[in-house]
Length: 415
Image 1 (tube, rainbow, N blue to C red):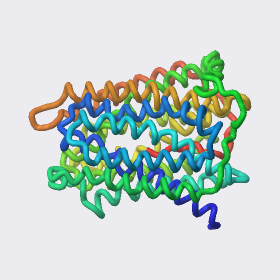
Image 2: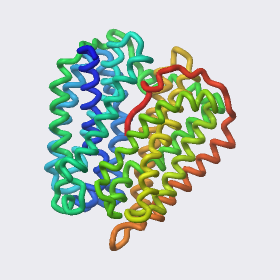
Image 3: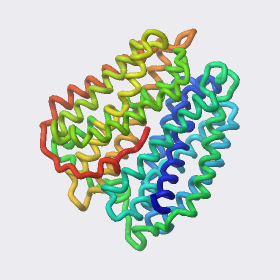
Image 4: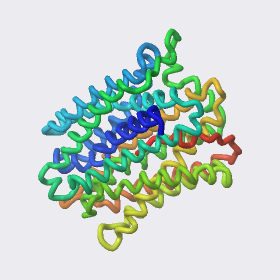
């Protein structure tokens, strides 16, 4: 591993260590330590969507035109470190929310910036990027394992003692380290310096013409709708596991990221053999199965059901979202490829997840009980909803052959 590869790998490791260090346990922390309602927890998680909506403006209007990507990356993570420390000190949800919103607004643009820094140093991204990007997944896994097994912050007694707040302090330190480290990364000059950038280019609106294709329109709508059950996992999985008595819940949830790596390797083979329609359908059906397993699983005799449900994350995410990015890339012409990916990201992480977190919060509140939550009923909703999206896609989308490039590893974003 040469020096540049080492620098980029460490950058990816810290980038996703920071996110995995607090986002997974956010719902558990808010419910137990700040007495937040389901709707308030949904508001906190939806800051990811607001960050995704605002990120293109920061990248398109500032980073791509005026400053080196590595410098913007450093500044944003230093600001993030301060905001993370503020989250660590927040005494109630009213004080917490503005800081988490501010944090996500500065963090979400860094996802594109780390990719820009990495790609600028590669001669053949299709072969090189996956080896760099996998360190981000490793960073997320290490964060989860550290919280559960090294620091033991996510046990019931530790949560009651307020120790889960330390996740924000951990992420603040990691963000400070990445902020300072970013200034040592290879120089990445602005790629659109001197060019006029309009709203169409920034938001990917030039790709709207793709919606005239019926198949792509069905895929686009399905992508937004499937984000509603996806939001239930991000928002409720850790609180559910913790509340039902699963020990080291955060560490066990890293099975999802391990499966991401495994199924990422399987995905090109599956696409070539079965085609895009069956691959996308298989991904959506995995969401249905996951939530049924969560509905019937428990911390005792049903723990295997829960672990399988967690491990299905690789199928759920890779087979729908990553293969969907590949499908989008194949449908878009050379001029609108970036715009098309931007449009899909805005639709899913922006519109879809925003709606999903709001709905998940309302459903969770409606099944709150004196002793916790009626989780069986909560998990049935995303299971039924995902199945409805599955049926819609199966009936309306006609199978087609697509050109599959080898940049599968370059499209993944860990969660």
